[in-house]
Amino acid sequence: MAFSKLHIVLFAQLALVAMASTQPSASKSDIFREYIGAEFNNVKFSDVPINPNVEFHYILAFAIDYTTSSSSSPTNGKFNVFWDTDNLSPSQVSSIKNQHSNVKVALSLGGDSVNGGSCYFSPSSVDSWVSNAVSSLTNIIQEYHLDGIDIDYEHFHADPETFAECIGKLITTLKNNGVISFASIAPYDDDDIQSHYLALWKSYGHIIDYVNFQFYAYDKGTTVSQFMNYFQTQSSNYEGGSILASFISDGSGGLAPQNGFFTACSRLRNHGKLGGIFVWSADDSKALGFRYEKQSQALLAAHP
Image 1 (cartoon, helix red, strand yellow):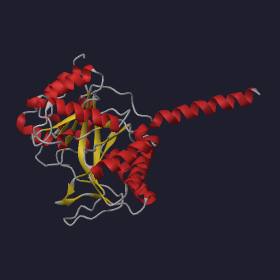
Image 2 (cartoon, rainbow, N blue to C red):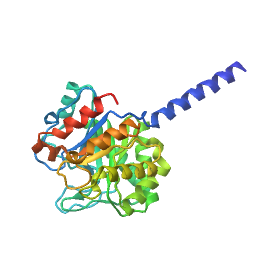
Image 3 (cartoon, helix red, strand yellow):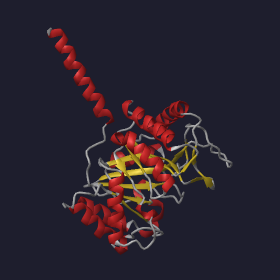
Image 4 (cartoon, rainbow, N blue to C red):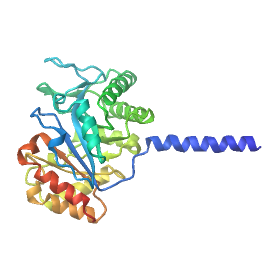
């Protein structure tokens, strides 16, 4: 009898460990995240100011399952690196993480375009895509000393259920294998985008740590009150998720930093709704001296 009870206890403990390996980290509001490397303008990790009192995530843009030739074509989950590797190399990842204990580095999958054409999520089958993706991404993540992944596919040659199963199984496997410690998604307000990401959220939301919602995809000139309404809508769509507010450095859309973005963030934080802030992108912010990155982190580091 005692032997059986011991086995039951051990089984329960193992089950809890397995659950913990796939559960998202507790929601925090001091997360600052920034995409970097997509525009090849020589921006370096060390260019971006880092506040020691936030959790800081660089997100390398992008890793894409396309060939690297000029006439790129899909590779069914066999990912290649498409960011500025001259300035954002494995040794530079190690260096910035060694210098700043609050820094983590992730890579983002997909993006809007590849070599001038749209970048499509185009799996041959769920099992083959997941197998290829796990293998190729594990190699890249380990080579670059990375901590997590972000999902930013914006065009699809697959239905929402196939997308959900491919991405959900990829995140689950990478977490269970100890390859990554967090995962995020980066949807925006478009019917096709939302149908795919909400299908993923419905089935696998419990393993997604952050929602990098692209609020800057809303119209330029968005007001504070509009932004607050948009944030509430997406919080309902991605119910239970850690929703980050966002702005785009070039000011081409959404609520701009100079027009009330930080007012909106302060209100959200005071109500316990702000999951953090992310920026697209360091490449464009470089010319601005990263002034809004500094302001974002100061807001997040301050006690609400």
